[in-house]
Length: 266
Image (cartoon, rainbow, N blue to C red; front, side, top):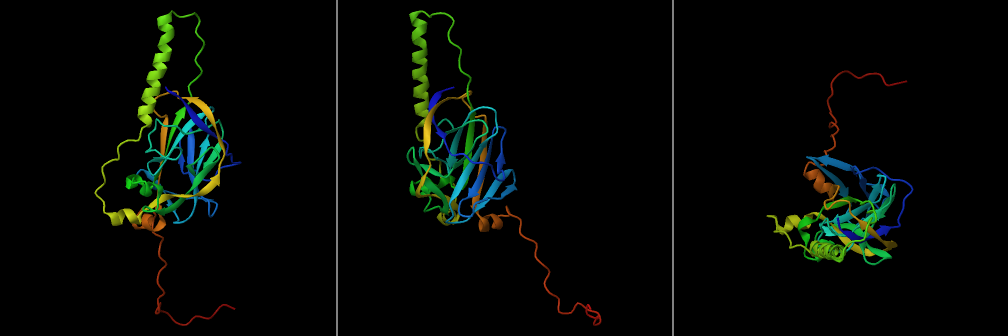
């Protein structure tokens, strides 16, 4: 239950759009910033998909509908959107207060701005340009509840016991540092370069003003309370894979439908 410094996002929205993935604590949606519309969700074999338009910027919308603060660790294409490391649930993220709806529109560059998310080819994606293309096409959010404040000690401790919390804190810090270290890249899937290039990834776009501030957060548990996942690709790819149902075709015109000539309407 490590205590960490996280970011408290100051981006608030008056209301939310359609929910892509509704969790017990947090709801996640994806909004196309170019059109201003929340992307439609397509369930398929236990997964949720949205269709992105190449070149369009997008935003991940997070809604905390719990009664307390939560920590949300946002992964895009297998990369932590806050620090650019290969994503792990133990890393830092954004803290949302009860009832808050926040929009995360890019890769965090400073306390004041982000580099815009936009749909693009794998080669042009941030993951591809940092030699980590294996997990393009997925957005993940690990959610943690906040631990309750510990009550003050009732009696003074002997010196040996008084030094124990500092040693424990050091052990937690070392464990957190190891967890935050970039993990070794996973083995490449048996997939051709041409197949990888045809999928959508997320680019590292222009700077967007997105002020935030630091806050302390102590996780209630070492494991995330929930992990929400949304997969994405182009409309054409999702259609070709059968994830988006093909529209019903109108019957072709029949030149000889039969019968005699009827009177026209008066």
